[in-house]
Length: 89
Image 1 (cartoon, rainbow, N blue to C red):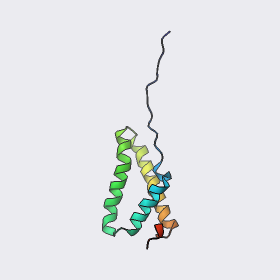
Image 2 (cartoon, one colour):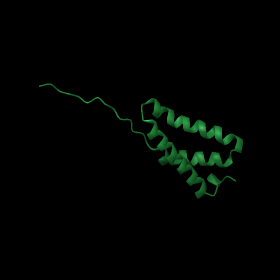
Image 3 (cartoon, rainbow, N blue to C red):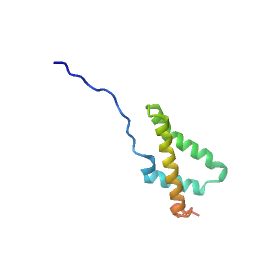
Image 4 (spheres, rainbow, N blue to C red):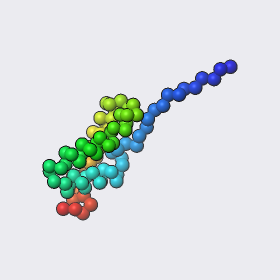
């Protein structure tokens, strides 16, 4: 009798869009950041979230979909608070 093992691994990550503190922090930062700094902040944040997933082998299409859901969650937080995230503005 020979045992066979399935050694494949699947990377499961907690969705960015469900990380309330991260969504709120990003929304607050975007709400108070000067316009010329927003793109740099946003691009660095998205890279810090997506690069580890890409490095781990998660398909780019899934990573992009997760980044889009995160963007939507941040945008919804800004709209929900009228840009007054964390009592700022």
